Length: 390
Image (cartoon, rainbow, N blue to C red):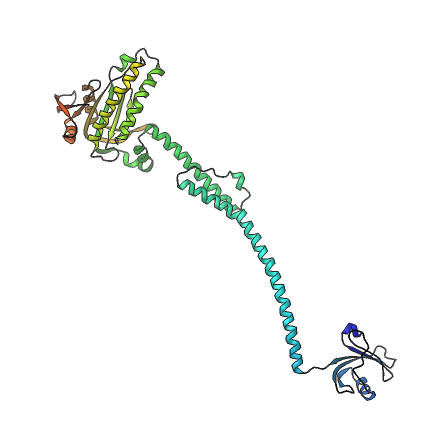
């Protein structure tokens, strides 16, 4: 009993102490109980008493057998209020220390759980979003990007799958648009293609002041009559490749190819006051290039071509012409016809211009007057000039 209760325990039989034990099970010899004290204690189940030495104890009486004069008394030394408070403070400190250790342990477990959760979020949510952000940045900077296939993000949450799928669809539309733009640029000047894609409505008929440039190869039919079709196309493209580059380098755009002739424009779709001078300079460079190319072709025993060029500066009507099924951007008006007639006047290797062009390049290019010309269907006569090429 003493060991179980961790208190001093006395076995009393016939009003005398038979055995007394300490909490550790050893014999108790410090508590001295007189017969009078025992008699008072046996009358109650618990209370406070003093031993023969004056020590005050709290006791509990247990009677195991009702028909026997046997009692067990459990004693606990009664403490002062200060001792109680001290013990209470000690117990509280012990409790706080225990709680602190438990909180530390819980904190470690919680921190580990948070780190694992963040790792999971980084892997399952943040990483895909980072991939998407990098793809958006790559597309925004004009670079191609290999975006993950649908199978690679199919295990993501619904919201992320929707976001990825929408971006992939947008990327496909952009790529399709770029392919369309690339194809369009092969058949139209980039400036015209951009205008059609961004604001096609503005190209449905507008009068502009433009420089019209016509180049036509002389005796082309006669020279290529017996030439195989593939060789004829290859030869034309050899000449046109550099002609087109020179025109573009001087700010012009290619309107169309008509067999062995090319129509180029300055001031379309945006006005260009320097168009007359730029067109003449482009024509001079083209004639120089044709001379060099012809010398090379002569050494290879190939057919050589010579081009006449006519340039005019006047108002034309620009716009998208044609039907709903098929249309093209071009310019129309009498000024286009006049330029074609001026081109007809020029012999191979020559550049002829109208007064309108001459007035805009006076003193900058050397020319000689070829006199007045009248064209069929055109009431007004035109004074024409031939540009002197170095």
